[in-house]
Image 1 (cartoon, rainbow, N blue to C red):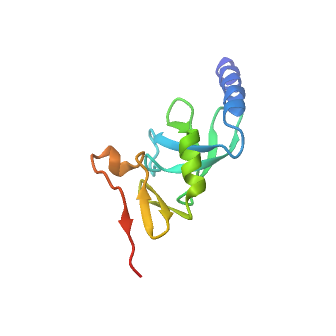
Image 2: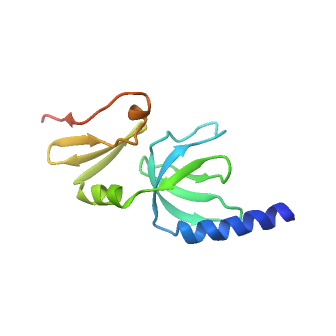
Length: 126
């Protein structure tokens, strides 16, 4: 019972900090057999009573982020502004791509960046 009470108090704090519609980026997923890749962005749907943050990710998957097992953060004001400037967005693997005109720009938070690759733009030719 003490564990549930502790998680419930944590859940209330998370509900205040990450209300429905908050944009997040996944930093790591612990022990999931089919994890979502780090750098994947998503939108918070709800935080339940045991502090699981349920999200719809930009790659189409829905999954709960488990408190104490997985890690994420809210997008910064700068990242939110960049998203609003995008004409289109794609999630490819762990890369978040934003299209501006005919240029696709890779988010620096993506998995490619974590592996030491720096993708600044991908050009698509019709």
